[in-house]
Image (cartoon, rainbow, N blue to C red; front, side, top):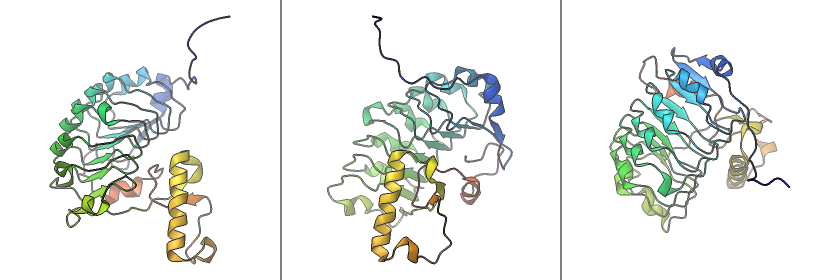
Length: 270
């Protein structure tokens, strides 16, 4: 009988031709390489030949590792890795000095595998670490002085360091569904941190199982709170869409524009 380690699922092979055909021009003229929902299990080396793109979307795949060669994407302003199986991030991610937005939500990241290089992303404005396995947040993230939004929801946090809560430009901090011993103390800086929930429409088929369960639980809670049922609502209905604060956002063009990003050729959010 043949021996050997059991192999994981064999993902789709991404060729350079496929990658080139997946480049999209954003509303503000940037170039986005969109390889989301492609069934990718390993980082496609061929895309290193397209390292001059402004945005890279590898979300909703089955990636377990991002190689240090990610540092070749020096023009990158937008990196979306949400809903994969990442257990760590490379130290080299800290070299992406133009990065404006980083989404690693819904992975398997632990605190010890967060690279120290994260605190080198001096231009980072939006960081999403939600739906991971974090039991603490490094105080070094307080070095991200340009940060305006940070997602820490659905982790195992018991506290948030003051260096993060008191970041000078922070406007939104979402730390819901963490086992804080006293949740009221975690929003003591609430006057300057607006814990705003944004509403996004997303098709149910595009949500991972954990996101879908979270959305449906939140919808049930909202219905109970309002003491109404979905059939009683008078608002226009969207039978195939879920509405509670989804972390998996498909159509974000309006959101990009609404966030008032700097008007440069690289400023665009997928």
